Length: 395
Image 1 (spheres, helix red, strand yellow):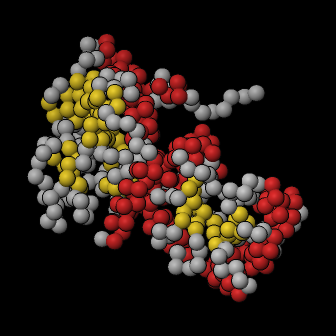
Image 2 (tube, one colour; image 1 turned 180 degrees about the horizontal axis):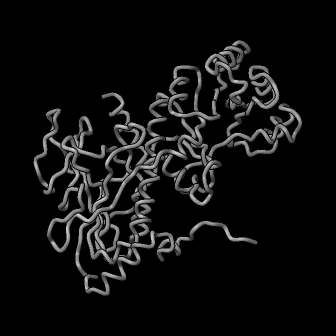
Image 3 (tube, one colour; image 1 turned 90 degrees about the vertical axis):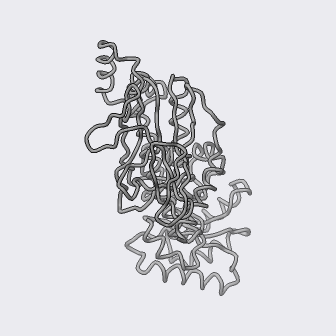
């Protein structure tokens, strides 16, 4: 039996997934007696994809899990922080700072960036989708489009960004939530009819699982919706995953199903929609009678944030490559409009253009390889994200 092409935790820690030139750099520095030179490295982004104005910082806990035990200090903005990548003077905002000998952590640059860039992109797209849904339920259904080795990362990031639930058991374990899902079209096809599938689900699946029936496999959606209501006593909802070739005006189709359900006395049955949804199509349906959205690929395959790690101080002196600003810096943010500021001092008086005084938001999170604070629950981080995106969407 062939091996799967995914790295183990041990292989990641051993540097098997790093870009090879980091290993060569360490070898050269050790050979030239520069192994113990202390440096500051900062993690920043120059811009955001898709014209995004803000992003959600995600993935920090996994970075700390990776770096725990190494002789380094790490400072970072809290995971779940809504941030902008630059100040109004175009200075890149340091999202995370690492202090130590470069040879003690440089080989981990590839892994650390990957643990921040992709999760932050997924969390940001989830947050934007939650806003587009006008705070209705959004379920993360995108694992099937991505490599299974990262399903936990995808689900955690989507949940932290604002999704109300995830679809995999691993994601449920990581987020501390019960995974959700209805049934695939395969069940109806294998059972031979909607009615047989609906009744089998209701008779066999444990009662605590919400009864939400998929209604677009064989027949007209409004007919199948009523069939589901009659087949399942405690029906929670129906799901429309209507293919594009049959969808027509999806908004009108949803309203038609709602009318039919209400007319026959099934006002309490929810309507869930899924199938190729993204931020824009969710927004177009948000003002309808839809109760929730199953969103897949647009969240799981969200644009990755283009963050980079750069040395900004060596042996106590500022240093930087061309195009970057040298010196160890501290991140500030306006509590009102979320504009960002940067200072060389952790207790500066940084004013926002809106008139508010900015807050220094960086915190020490790793001290000599030891975590400073206990890990935060994903639900706690998510609650803070929801608070921030509500504020930013209303400003």
